[in-house]
Length: 532
Image 1 (spheres, rainbow, N blue to C red):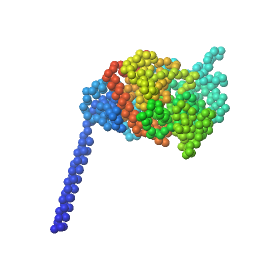
Image 2: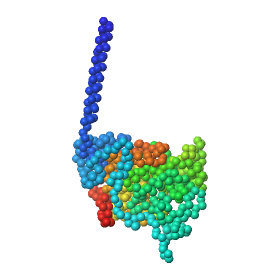
Image 3: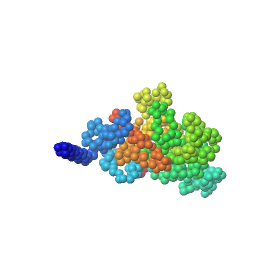
């Protein structure tokens, strides 16, 4: 009887087990069938992307909600379009011409291993034709050789040793420097000089100019022959020189790459980050602005490449060896130049950013402008723009913002600053030669918007060209990426989140105001027709 009872129990358990397995199989089949029956992408997903949709804030911040048409970073598949979203889409896109240029009608499919960065730069929005350049549109130019008996001014870089065949010859006897012999032939110019000669009224460099890549490569590899502290400024910076007489602005690593700014700090109460300088150059390039001088990361030996070669006695006196054997220094500046906040090698190796210097002020004077939206830098007082609701109207009626492209150039800079969380832009610079008709220099990286800028921002919100993805790929080409990623994933995710905020703000502005978009595309087309 006992055996029969046990056998009956085993039979019951076996039946229960079989029933449970059958239930699980049916459940799994229903899940798989549901996932396979998702509706194809509708026009609403494209509409939401073009109206400013971007990846959801993965940090779950309540202040940055996902835009309509997106859920958890994935484009919604529903065919339903809320009437508010439809109105936003109509305002944002306005014309089928925009839709065609962005490529809204075709899904972007990236094969495994395909470069999103190259796909971005091959997009029509990054290859828009410029108006023809006139003689006065170049910042610097080679002056023609003077004819016999003809009086002319000296060349911009001409020395007393100039001759019929030579524009400039080096008489430097310092060890390590090249014996330069530059003529009017571009083949004799070092890359940094060719880069300077390529600066125009509209951009600091042409993205396709091979000299820019050479400048970056040489800053990363050429021997450093001189290092002195840059005067002025609030934090430590050095000017370093290379054998071909090129120079770069050096910013040292002050904190880890993953460090996030304390939300309780005052606007400027933080270290300048060397990796932020590198990322700013790449971001400016990805946005299509081309207004930040070339920047590259590098590992240097603090003893051999700074302490051992500097002629700056004030700088050399600040070197010391820490208790754990690291070589440290702090220089002399307004903030963070004390033994409490030193720059230290590990034990002698230091990460730095190197930014190519602009043409000397004697050749290309620059003018500094106070930002109309600068902060008060007071813990108790508000800035004028924080108190006056009509402040923007006042700025638009005040020179130099009342004419030319100054205001939309400024907005380009504001977008860049917001994406990289630069809250300390109190001044900006322009080249004096070009007056008000020129771009703004985006240096120290640390209310209308161009149509081309807005369309590129929308493009960077699409999955095939997502800003965080192209930035990750672009930064991977920097030498310091072999040490560690220049931007951590939270920083990259923040770019997508801020981009969504920018697009949302523009759409909101367009819903309440007229003339929000400056149509530079039509303007450029008109200039080209005149040139023809």
